[in-house]
Image (tube, rainbow, N blue to C red; front, side):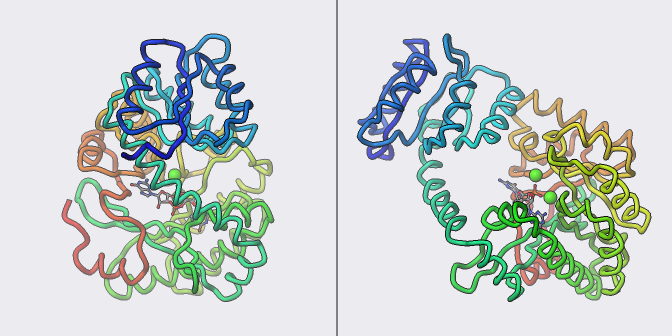
Length: 400
Ligand code: C2E
Ligand code: CA
Ligand code: CA
């Protein structure tokens, strides 16, 4: 069945548990399964150069000699293409940090499961690999296919469009706004996600043009919506690198006023970042934007860095809790505690709390019981084109 054409490596020091995982893999049809008792053995096996590279590594965290975290670091540093499933007894919150760490090391993480692993979980993760690997391949192709020059051409042709993802007021269940997310509507390749162009633009320090195209089109959309009687707030993502330019706040304000939109209808989402060096300029820009009436949102809250403590001095109007804390909150006590304290922090600061990545009815119900103000996520709707969003708003959105 699903696992037959894949190469596996199981890294686990407990003999019994290792044998359990191996036999589960075999029952799913796997024929190529290697076993290692700790990270060091696993690395040696990977270096030994098996005829076919390992596709999926299943890895315990707590092991003698070389633990799972060190093993993942080596995997990332060696640019090993294997996908990883973390098997662990760690608390969910700890697993979230391990997931973040893996991402930071560039490890392709399929998911993490609390032990004992079930057959259904394993099958689901392998399926995710199969779906994801074709998608990941498309994406990495896309990253390679699109050169900076091609992206520039696409920008010149104004092929980048905001897609709108609804934000819903949790108390009333009513649509209150949308986040504008960049998409490249490519004449040949279709709708391309931000991973294929934003990192390149950031690296080349050429995000500004995209930021302004997104702002322009999003503000025009806001105006269209208001003309049709929908007074909605539109959120636009702002790259921190743009904030170092001291003229940014005035340019943004001018653009919005020229379009006949009140800055109070626009929220700017800013992510915390380690790369944030020019704190003074960022603070000046943010203070000026707030003074002109814009909403300011701390994006991906909970995943960031200390520089944010400085940004906290600014009058933010919204705290956006990162989806890694929101997904599966209904089933996880530790996540619930983290999110509950973020919501309470928001309330004490008198700013709105927004949960992103709300995927299920249960997550929605849990967040509602915690008095979260606003929700965004696939449970309500995925990001969509302006036309689709207009239809969504017109149809009375979604009863929640
Ligand atoms: P973000 O700002 O954290 O945006 C939320 C991302 O989560 C979006 O991915 C959205 O499609 C996705 N998402 C929303 N709800 C769910 C859910 O329920 N489940 C799951 N699994 N995902 C959900 P997207 O559109 O691929 O954007 C990725 C990132 O790219 C954004 O993360 C943002 O950091 C960046 N980005 C997108 N557009 C812009 C832009 O115009 N300017 C800047 N500077 N960054 C942008
Ligand atoms: Ca955002
Ligand atoms: Ca996020």
